[in-house]
Every structure is written in C-alpha cells, then in structure tokens.
Image (cartoon, rainbow, N blue to C red):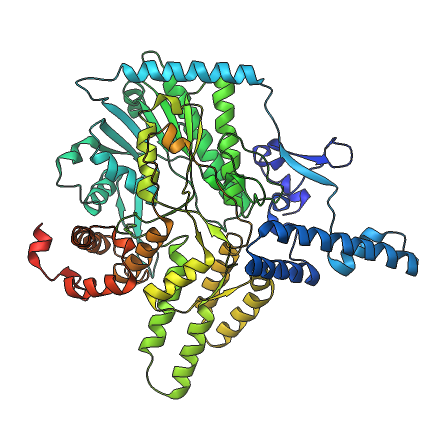
Length: 622
C-alpha cells in the first residue's frame, strides 16, 4: 500500500488519526501521511545482506553468553564502525553523502524520525478524578445487584463461538453470580463443498444449541441461563433488533467484547474493520446501555492482547501505559488491537464509559488437559505441522525413492524459525477466562489495563526439547532473520518441486507469522494486577506444563488437526478430561508435570487411542 493508496481508505482508517511522525532532530511533528506498512518491523530491516548477517551474529552472541544486553551493545558498536568506515570511504572516493554509502554498503539506515501515539489532553489530576468517579459508580451499581449473597449478573458476550468465547460459556455455566449470558451470534450457512450451494442456514438459536452440546452443557441445569441472539459486531448497535435492544437496555449489567480477528497475516484494512470498527461498535453499544434511564449497567470489559506493546526489546511492557514501540509491530493484528485499546481509553476519558481492558498473552489450551475445543490456530499450527510430518515419515512404504522423498519432506517441515533464547509468553485459556469473569465482579478494575500473562515463559529451545520428548520429532531451530529471508524461500521452492505445494504454503505462512515472535529480545510483560485487582491466584500456570499438555492433546485428541468434526472432538475431549483427572489423582500432581515416559505408560494402560475410550468403564462413569 503506497501513500496515495491510503487516501482510498476511509479517513477513519488512516494511521495518522492515531499516530504521528516526529522529527528526531527538532522534535517537531511531521505532517506527512504514511502507509500502515511503515509501522511494522519488517519495513525497517531484512533488506540488506549485511543487516541479515549482523542479526545472525548477535543471535550467536546470545547463545554463547546468554546476555541480550551484550548483543545490543555489540550491534551498536558494529553500526558505529560501519558509519565510521563509510565516512572514510566517502572522503577517499569523493562521495558527498556518507549516509547513502553506509546504506548501500552495510545496510545502515538511520531514521530521522520516530512514531508516537497522539496523546489526549487530560491532565494527570483529571485522569485520577475521572477514574475515581467511574470506580465509585461501578461499585455502587454492582452492590445494588447483590441478592441472597449472589450478584445476579446479566451479561452480553460477543465472540462466543471463538476459542476464548467458548471457555467463557463453560465457566459462566458454573458461576453462580451469572444469572444470564446473552451471546451475540450470526446465522451460519452450510454449503456444499463442491458446488458452493447453500444446503442449510443455521439460526442463532440452533447454533447456540449445538454449541452447548459441544460444551457438555445442553443437558445441564445451567443451560437455562444461556440465550443466543442474532447480531454482528461490524454493524451499529451490534446488529441487534430494535425489540431485543429495548429488552437488553433494561437488563444487562455487563458487556464482554471478545470478538476479534486473530489472523496475524490479515491485511491492514481487514484487521482494522474487525478489531477497531468492531470495538467501536461495542463501545458505542455499552455507552448506550450506561446512558439509558434506569439501566443496571455496571461496566464494559474489552479483551485486547498484551502484544499491543509491540516489539519492546529493552524495557518491560507496562500495564498502565501504551506507547508506540521503537521497534515497531510484528503485524497488523497487534497494531489494530493497540488502536482499539486507544479508542477504549478515549471513550472512558471523554465520554465517561465505565470499562476495563484485559490483555491476554498468547492463548493456548486449558492448563490441566490442554483441551482447546478444536482450535488449530497460533501455537497449535506449528505443532500440528511437526506431528503430521512425523506421521508421513512413519507411514511411508514402498520404493526406496518414495521413502527418501518422504524423509526429505519431513525434515524440511521440521525447520522452525526460532532463536534458542527467545521467550514466548503462553497463557492457558482457563486462566484468561478466570480473569474475565473476575473482572465482572471487581469494580476497581474499571479504568485499568490488566495483563493476563504468565511470569514463567518458554524459550524456543524449551519448545524444541518438549516437542522432541512428546512427539518424537526432531526440530531444527533456524535463526529467524536468516530463515525468513534466505532459507524459507529456498525451502518452499524445494517442497513445491517435490509436489508438496500445500505444505510449502503452510510453512511459508507459519514462518512469516512466527519468525517475529521467536527472535531474541521478546517483550517481557509486566504482571500483577491479575492478582492485586482481579484476585486471581498468584501461582500462575506453568508455561512448560501447559505446552506439554498442548502437544499431548494435539497428538492424541486432535490427531494433529486432522479430526475436524466438532461433535467428535467434543466427545474425545470429554474422555481425555476424565483420563487427565484420573492421572492427577493417581500421581498427586498435574499431568503436565509428568515426564513423557510416565505419561505414555499411563496412556497405554488407561486409554484405547483407536476407539478413544477409557479402557476401564468405571473411570468413564466416575
């Protein structure tokens, strides 16, 4: 997208509405328009061989010393040396501009500007007064709900069919303070895969009924607290009918806005429509509830991401503030979620909307069993690719040529872009939703931004070790910059020539997405408000244990993403849950803490993995 193409976007999508370009020399705001890609990290690097090699060398420094600050220091020294050499050469050959020579020879590209978010005009005192006012009002409204020891909350949920949304439904079913959960859901067309003909249109009510069945809730007493209504977050008033809207205005206490696009490779416009427009519609909706006479509305709870802070490679990503990252954003998902967060803050300060922002890290399956209700995105995707590569190698028979080809494909598919020291923040979905439901009951969370992240992270090296132990797959870590710019293009060409076009495209997509999150210098997210304000347990889930259970679940329950039927996945996850609970009782510790050998032995003794039923019927009944 060029600068001229920006003006083909609606003005509300222009990045310059939220972000300004500032001269490093004078501190003045530069009035240029700029295209969205300039806000991503890959627009500022990977364009020169020396730059790529320098990053590779810094990766090796960290591997040898474990000291990221030393790597940054060496990088700065190399840049100074490059500039000094360029000045000397420029004088020797009569070049007038040593900066251009430095860029041409060494890839040294000195920016004369930086980006920052446009700030609101509220003083610190005004902000404190506003927050105090909003918290007091939320506390008053919430206390008025308490009857017979329960709060009798009535909540509207967007994004209920998504990964996090399903867990909200599950936990809400078992929460006595939630009297009603109204879920916004669109009708769904069932089409013939070959012809595209619409075979059936599922109503919101029918989709909701099926969803409750998949969540093991349809026959429970809690099913009565759920209601599914037609709507669309990309439309005004969330696309809710006028009659339904009148009813909700007099009953809803909270809105949980969970709907978003988590596609890391979506273009800017698509990400903006899903994440910013959708958020604005939800904020307007909640403001309408709060302003309605006699409304019991307490607060709006927006779900963002802790990666709104982008590529912070030096300082902690703080909960209290959001600043444009000097190292830019990895993708448009992060950028547009950050813009959505800024819009939420504006609604709070300018319009007085009572709201809280919860910012999860990278969300994975449930902490104890790894159950993810069929999700195959984000971290699940590379794990499934590794597993299927192993399966292909194990099942290949026939001629030596075919076996050799399968071995080559499997090895190529198990190259993963990751610096061994890169720290990845994984947080199980049950911890995230515990935080979401706690926010409904804690008025002091109003006006706050809370990271739902872990204080224990896994490194790329740990991921390699765990995948090797759990899946018997040998992953080769590739330096991310080198992989993205050199190895991956060659790899996809080789796989395509071997007739593996789909695998090549999958690896290309995964490499493009994950190479940014597996480089050294990943952000460290401040945590604390999850415990101090939300009241969650200070013992956050172990990232290592959770990732082990993710691998085990994807292997045995989902067959590495190849079991796609939602009903069958639901059945298998119920059996898996019973199996895992049995393990915990037997060993008196989390299943994720068991070694791979101990887990496999218990699995073989207790679970028929072909029929996927427990061997001991009594275990199923219990």
